[in-house]
Length: 325
Image (cartoon, rainbow, N blue to C red; front, side, top):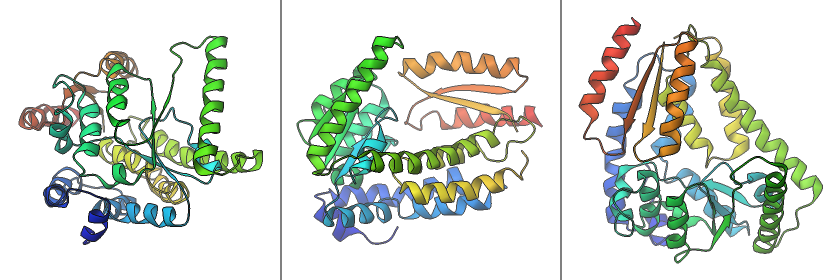
């Protein structure tokens, strides 16, 4: 990482503690990502982003704020980014994806809470993530009970807007969600001071759909069991960075990666679920069943952000790869 200490200090971060995270990241990234064999050359862009992950994009966001733009931090894809972009706002994802932030989250949340939620809260309260410091407003959604309680805590520390998610797909639920989006659009207009016009909304939809289409190309390239050109690890990295990168740049670089993937060949599926997340754990059974019916080898894994089970997982995954030949 480049030296960004001055910027982090101005953001009110705990720079000394944050240095510990920065020191561990290169080794962890090398072990998990760079150690992979036959990686796509197109992954070089994402490797570059990670090399200064708390510097490059945060610096861009701060510069945009100086020019009058507002930054909205979101936790879920259900939040309509198009509304924010149409009001000349910027969206950045705020998911805590590291065990580093869990201890600070456990200071205010039960230890049995989903690690994702604990890490997200810890990233803000521990003052060790620039994205959580930069966002002018957080936008939450009622997708799970743990998140709802976390938003109450985060709302004491930063402006918070919560969208109420319908739990079914009836006509009345569609109308309810439409009203939720309209209410959110009004709030965004008030917060940014910018009017959302049909023309601006149409352009925002075009930009964000282009990014989604590029990500869909990467996903499509992974479907054929005889032609899996990128590891799930790298595909996840691409998706994670897409949550906070500039959408136009993200679409361009993802399409370049997809061009390469469509020319490559590779192996099976490892389905990884976080402990305590009932939704994805339950869906895992259905995913594995569908893969087996399609004749695609699959290994189901349940783990946490903690690395205490790393050797056990290494053994299981090694055996799975050996089985694939």
